[in-house]
Image 1 (tube, rainbow, N blue to C red):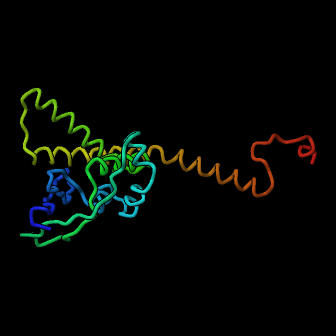
Image 2 (cartoon, rainbow, N blue to C red; image 1 turned 60 degrees about the vertical axis):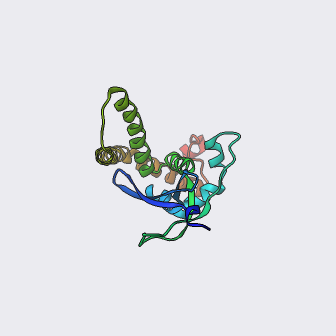
Image 3 (cartoon, helix red, strand yellow; image 1 turned 90 degrees about the horizontal axis):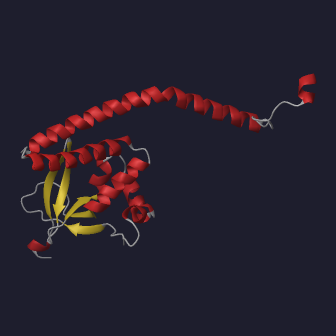
Amino acid sequence: MAQNDKAQRATVQIGPLSVDGFQMPDGSYRMSITSAATAVDTSQQNATNFLRSKALKALQGSGYTPQSSEQIEVDATGQGRGQTRITALPLDVVFAFWLYQCSRGNKQAYNLLAALGLETLERRFDTAFGVERSESERNAILTQRLQQTESALSALGEAYAEPDVLRERVTRLEQQLRDAGLDPWQLPTEESNDG
């Protein structure tokens, strides 16, 4: 493979996250499957399973032909770190994976997508009103939003923890009654009242 046929690597800041981004010779972008998974605090295997599932096609809509992960060769010139071959995902697949993780209750994925969505809207408003911000300012704002969302979700989780514990106890008690041969929701009969 000729030098210009290799992907170029660059560090991409997403608020507090630093991920390796890759630009393909055709100008399109990729992220490694490992970075996509790590960004939302899950495993590479989880991302690989997602690629094999029907969920990706469902999220992308009918008629979508999933582009599976691909092994790409990365230009290592001037780079002291990283592999020269990676398993890469197109950005639409990375976003779909993060969205799928949100639907499965992954709080870190939710935080990240909520903050990125707000930034996208804000960028459009900034353009409409002539407001200019540097990328470092945007990353600082994104970092702050991620921290605020994480704190809010943590507080919300604590508020709902007690009902969850109670629900789990009721489920456990119901199962114990079933294991003892009783129906937990059956009304007592006359015979059981006499005894």
